[in-house]
Structures are given as C-alpha cells and as structure tokens.
Image 1: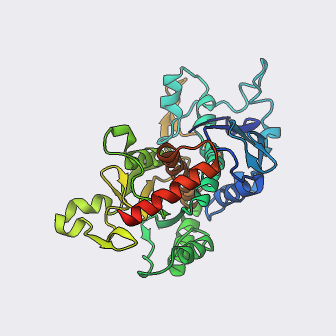
Image 2 (image 1 turned 90 degrees about the vertical axis):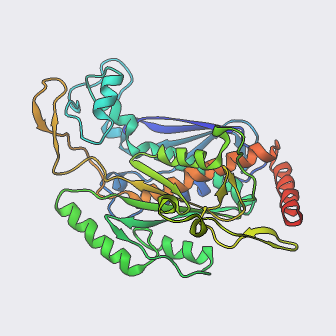
Length: 387
C-alpha cells in the first residue's frame, strides 16, 4: 500500500492517488468529507477556513460505493483558486510579481527551500510546504480509517496541551468512546472543559498580540492485534513508521510513544509493563507505559503516541529576516495564517497514524479483497487468545 499527493496551496486542487487497497471496501465521499470537516474545525484557525469547505471527489478505484482493487484517485478543489488563477497559472504568462515573496519567514521552509531548488520567488516553495497539503492526507487517512473500522480498530486523537496549558487525564476506566465523544465537543479537542476555556482565552490573547501558539496532541489506537510491525529490520518497526508519519506533518518537532521521554527519568521497575495471562483472552499487560509497542511491534494494548507542534511561523507581528534578493534586513513576509492549529494537526495525526496501521495490517494479512483480509484477521485474533 502506498499513496502520493500533489497540489499547491492556492492551485486549482489537491490530488491523492492510493495504490494497493483491497477490493470490496465500502467507501463514500460522505465518509471522507466528515474527516475533512473535522480538520477544518478548531479554535484559532485563520481566514482560509472561512473560504474552503473541503469536499472530496472520488475519480477512480470505487464503483457503486465499493473499492475495486485498482488505484483510488481523490481530488479536493481549492475554492480560493479563482482569486489566484493568474498568479498560480501553470501556463506561460502567469503573474509573477503581484504575490512574489523574497522575505523568508523564520521557522518556515521559505529560505532553505528557495536555496535548494534555486527559486527567486519563495512562493514556489511555500505553496507546497503549506499545511494546506494535509487536507490530502486526511482524505487518504479517511480511506485507511474505513478499512480499520472493518477490523474493529478505532483511531482518535485529543489535544493534551496548548501554549503550556496541559489538559487533565481522564479517570481510569472511562470508555474510549466516551473520551472521544467529549473531545469532539471541545473547540480545542481537550477533555477537561475548564482547561478548554483557559486555552480559548490564551488563543485570543495570542491573536491580539499578533503571536501564535503550539502544543501537543495524543493519538490513541484501540484493538490493534499484537504482532504488527517487526523487530527484524529497522524500516519494519511500527513505532518508527508511526513516528516518521507524525514527524512528516508540518510543524511537528517531537514524537513520543507511551511514557516517551519520561521513561528516561524512571528506573526500569517503574517503566516496564508487567505481563499477565487470562485463559481464553491470552496475554496482556497490567499497565501500558510502552504505549502498546515493544520491540518495534504492537503488543495488543492500545497504541498511544504523542506529537509536539511548534507555534506557526507566520506571525502578524513578523520577526526579523533578510531579503533574499537584496540582502537587506527587513521583517518577514506576512501570509494569511492561523493563530493555533494544534486541534487541526491532531486530526491530521489521526489520519497518518491510521494509514500506517492499515499498511501494517495489509503487510501481515494480505488479501486482494476485504473479505480475505477480515477472515485472516479473525483467525489471527482467535490464535492470540489461545496461544
């Protein structure tokens, strides 16, 4: 299984092509659009979200609501394209001056990308490096979620901190579905309502000051069977794949699994999860400090991973920079942007994590059809209960 995305932030559309998905998977544009809508929500988003109302078109690989086993093509039109058609035209004669950018933003891909690809106009860099690209990956992740749903695997995320304000942990024993429902009702995807209110005020203050905020989100994946991934080669380790997927999201600067960095401060007796066994249920862990992954493989417990997102580099009170063309010291370019996109990044995190789990499932169980894969997963779950 693999996918490829294409498209610029202010181009006519975003496109994704998915290859290797099994046939007979129920899939509709409505299901994908629900995930796209979730990405556009969240307090602190900018004006672009008032323009775009992302809707996917399925152009290939699906017929009568079912995948056919052939490549799936997804397309999301940019409604703002009408205002950028002359500037972003692929044809000779495009307007190359009106929106030209030569003042790079600290923390963005502008300068390094323009040097790497020898582009005097940094718009040729920011158009693709923009987080607008993540709409494509949310659409791809929705397809992966549809497959995981058939295997009774659920992926959801929550924000655990924004601007240094940390959310509270839910009480032990709260059902995952209840946690997910409460998080979905929060404008910043937090569990604690009072924490949400405090964060809302902080975002308002940051906007007033022309600043931006980052934070941390957590992805939880339930009912993943033990044995996805492998210890035998570095590129097959599932924690490495998940970490790489999360790090590939724009703005992410750190990833941890389970206790993560905290485990370095604790003795082994406080870190490692003791093992138990129940007849007819198989092996289990009494705790989940490992975040559901040991030795590069899922161990049957919920997978818990977190990602830290830096503050958005586009500031309404821009930082100092140097004009690439004149070498003059100026302030950075100002583009339309968000104050805080951590809740949206959390939805993107769900998408990329869902893809990696779906890809690992396909590698382990194979199958050209959904029926084949489901039968193999069912038999394997029985094996895990009896081993």
